[in-house]
Image 1 (cartoon, rainbow, N blue to C red):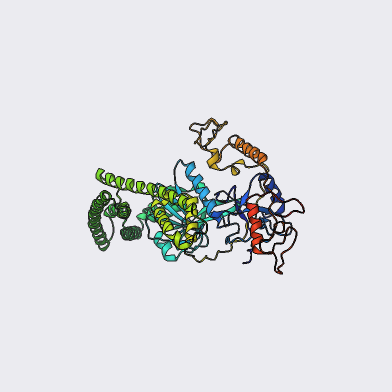
Image 2 (cartoon, rainbow, N blue to C red; image 1 turned 60 degrees about the vertical axis):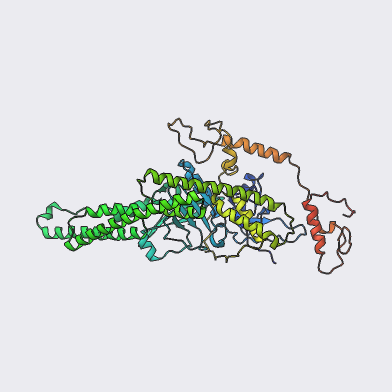
Length: 571
């Protein structure tokens, strides 16, 4: 297998399973500043980037772009890594998760953010964001086709993901996402695309999350233009002169509004949106001044909608009864299915009985998921104790139990546990390889010159500084830093104060300064060959290079940190 020689532009900071991405500057003059800023940090070919988990180093060039590179193997051969995505956009899913988490934190809200992998999609193709309002599924590439008919999920499309004309017309608009390079990071922008309108782009801070879903300033304009009643164009100087023209124009406006309401009502019924159907029925009942034929159509539509709402209420009562029985019987699968249907037919003024039943169902699923998460933890510990050479067919029963428990645990699983589960599936031969989609080539964006002052918040993960108190704004452990300008109430800062971060960085540097330096790796010809018996500094008797057993012995000595031999001696 030949090594992949494509240049690596992204890495993660600190460890192989880190979620802190960074991008290497492309120019040599900028790489010098980058190295000074991260002189005590380590870079890794992250597992969440699809990498091998090995440590990376920086390569400086003046005649081509700079990039990350793997350390060579102990035998001096180039390191082989199966990482497929290596360009500036290969860590976009990590940047999206980081930006979304900060966006919700600044608004005092919580959100569950994960990297979805339906049908074996590669990690990084999609990001699932679930808040109390809505669930967003960000499609960064074309690995999985967006689902437009699921009321519980709103797709957000990357630049390379297509959307057809009918979908744009039916949904009024769709959201897109793009990431722009700024120094050694990537900034998220949200775009709103509508039929016959150019895509408008906005900074993430200008967007909001509502019951309707993700909203931008462009969405507000689109909805207002589609739902507001056109103002009658009365002109006092012409109204008495041409009354027939003004009357015909007014009739046309009302007729157009009536047709729009009928289309929206039909669309809401198709999606079984009970609340929307009830609201549109009330609006249609208030429409006046239309033709007699149109008035009959409106009355028929309202009567049909009322009958449909009554049927939906009966369906909801039946679903709630079945849900209560499923909770009592402990049928988790049925509880999960019924609760999803009940939520889809939710009404704003639910009864106390409905709240009690749905609450009991949610508590049941939460307890099952918690028990399953503990089961996953125990199974992973058991699997780690097994011999490394255990054959696939002996691993499969335990791994299948692990997969079933993981499916029940759902969002309670940590990202590192999901990676471990995928690894065990592969070792047991239960994984299914999915074709990797072709990525759209995006022109490289010019890189801005980094700021002279070091940005400390990029060097310390939130999970570390949130545990410490801030000496500047007096924020306690577990609290965000606030703007200390005397305002009341004080505004939450997007990044913590440097005074809160500097003690953590100083302590980290002190630990690294006192940590013993690991010995250099063993070279192949420093060990005695188990096959041909050749000693140190003597080549193997084969013509094709050293024996494989000799290479493996050098790797094993390096892993065990065995002291290097003295000159002229054998190991």
